Amino acid sequence: MLKKTLLPLFLLVLCCASQVFAGAWTQQAGTAYNRLSGNYYAADRNFDDDGDRKKMANDGKFTDVNLNYYVEYGVTDAATVIASVYYKQIKHDDDTIEMKTYGFGDVDLGLKYRLVQFSGGVLAVQGLVKIPELYDENDSLPLGNGQYDVEARILFGHSLAYLFPGYCNFELGYRWRFEEPSDEYRYLIEVGSDLTDQWYARVKLDGLLSANNGDEMVDASGNPTITTEYDLLKLDVAVGYRIDDAWGWEAVYTPALCGENTAVGATYTLALTYQLR
Image (cartoon, rainbow, N blue to C red; front, side, top):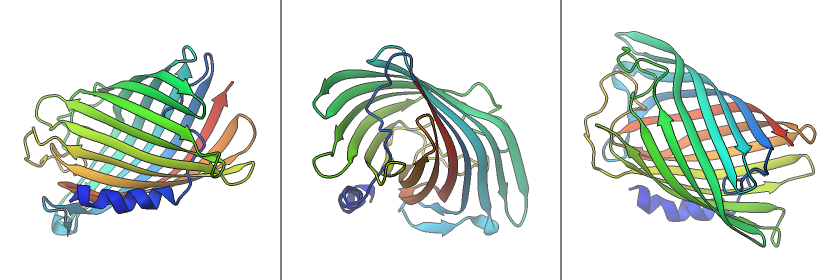
């Protein structure tokens, strides 16, 4: 179902613009990119195993309000370390019950390494580990599945200066999810552009496909976003403004486009960015 959707959405992305900070490029040695974002996610429907949208049982609704800090730091010109941490308040309520949990979620630690740099483009690889040690997976409404993930990804970015002041970025990866969850194929298509000297925009297609090698049972905790085996494709549309050479802000809208065995939701984001040079 997702595979049939990729071609038209790929053509859609190529007609749009995106952000000026692209995934494949590494930070210069001693520089850092910092992003603090406030996010609001809400869902009252699920994708079933045929990809159809169904209302949650008993008029249920799931929300995730969180703060995220993301940083990239250039150890060398070719090697960049990555870290990301969330502080969340999640809530699931319906006609029969209300559950709420708050605290730190999963922590991501990674390393991006530039393999090749050429005129207008770059090829890089990235490794990442998801660490689930800051919350209790046995909470009635857990902040995550409590299991480690390891991911390997290849990234390709290229300037589009011959067409307009922008870039494109393509990523393909595989995530090993230990114990019960299925492994995942990860992919991302991104186009970004400057609109003026200060304004920029970004569009991404951000997706995952289950490797179908896990337990298909839906997590019974009440958190519909941490099912053990699911597909999901999201659209990410962002507009940003550079306040000066260091500071900026972004507004982002990220709806789910299609999927299977997971929640149908959208995320609204406001972010503050800081580039340490």
